[in-house]
Length: 174
Image (cartoon, rainbow, N blue to C red; front, side, top):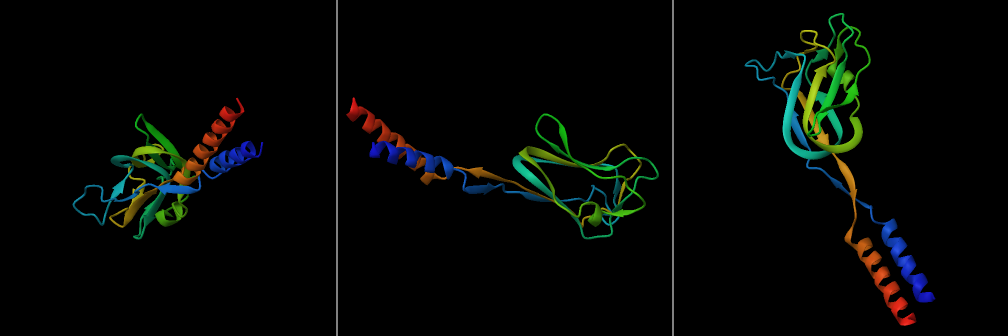
């Protein structure tokens, strides 16, 4: 009976510790220059980046320049979408834009969402307004990160050892 209890403890402790280690994605930083010859003066409604698929759960958007967004009097808002391989999924929608909103204020906090494999990032206007984003030059970066739990070898070994002990005890009892 003691052996069965020990085996059960080994199995439970192996499962309980199975997600202690986290794995971060390689992440990446993309710089916006909009393909213009003058990278210091970029105006756009949409910017898209496509890349190799990776696991992402956080997007940080930074603008160290004088970039700002405004909707030219319409009801349009700023959106951030990710491409999951089948289509674009919205992960951020701003509140209404009143006046010129600095990009450093608009994206002051990282955008977090349920992690997924993505292969694209899009900064967009909810409806075209003829250049919602202004001066979003090469000082604008998008940083992608992702963390997910992966089982470690030791707890899996404990689980296997517990199962083996339970099997041996059962065979001896039979």
